Amino acid sequence: MIDRLSATPDNRKLIVEWESGNVTELPATTLRQEARDAYTRRAKLDNGSIDVSPDLTITALTQVGRAGVNITFSDGHDRAIYPFVYLHALSEQYGN
Image 1 (cartoon, rainbow, N blue to C red):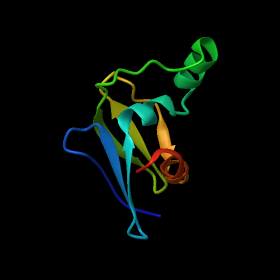
Image 2: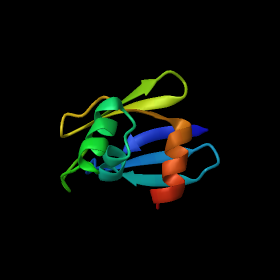
Image 3: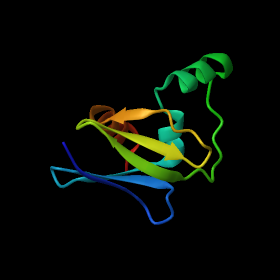
């Protein structure tokens, strides 16, 4: 499904290179706001949304098995795992 993952030179977007040859860029701010980990879900329930700095960057990408990636952000958040199927859905909704 995914051929390669990387960050843009400024680390503000995730570049997803799909096996089909399509390329999607997803902003770090969107990925952080759309994280599905327990901490983010609780914050959304308590506050209605996640406050994210417009200067947020991606600081690390860690492969999780064969079907997902863990993204670490400059705000210290490192708990969300993004299954490739979920990245595809986010790409359909937010990608450019």
